[in-house]
Length: 147
Image (cartoon, rainbow, N blue to C red; front, side, top):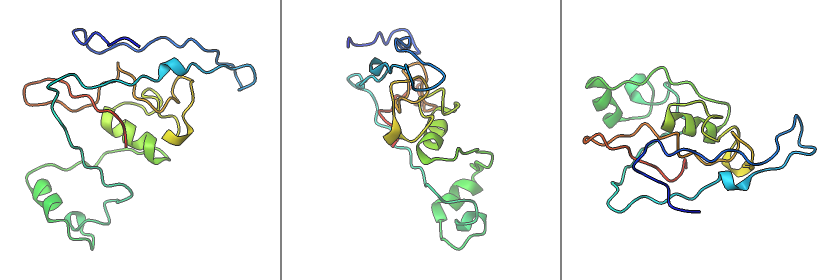
C-alpha cells in the first residue's frame, strides 16, 4: 500500500471492493479496507486516558466511594463530561469516544477481535474519520488504535 497524501485531509478511505449480501452466504470480504498507517516524522505523541467500566457512581468527584482527586480538580475547573452515550460493547464505545462518530461509521460494529473485511466491521478507524484530538497549533492528531 502506498503512503497516503497527507496534504489533503481527511485522508479518504478506499471504496469497498468486496460483496456484501443480506447474509454471509455469497458475501466476500475486502481485507484491503484495513490499512496500517504510520505517523509522519515529527508527529506529536498524545495520551488519552479512558477509565472503562466506571460509571458516575464510582468516583468521589460525583459522590462515589473511590477517591479521585485529579478528576475532582478537573471537574471543579469546569471539565465535566456527562452526556456521553455508550454502545453495548467496549471497543465500539472507545471508537465512538475517540472519534465523536457512530461506532459503525468508524469500523467498530463489533469488538475488535471479531473484525471482518466488511464496511463498519474492520476494527480499523478509516483514514477519513479523524479522531477528535487536536494540538494547540490546530494540527490534527492521528491515533494508531482504539485500545
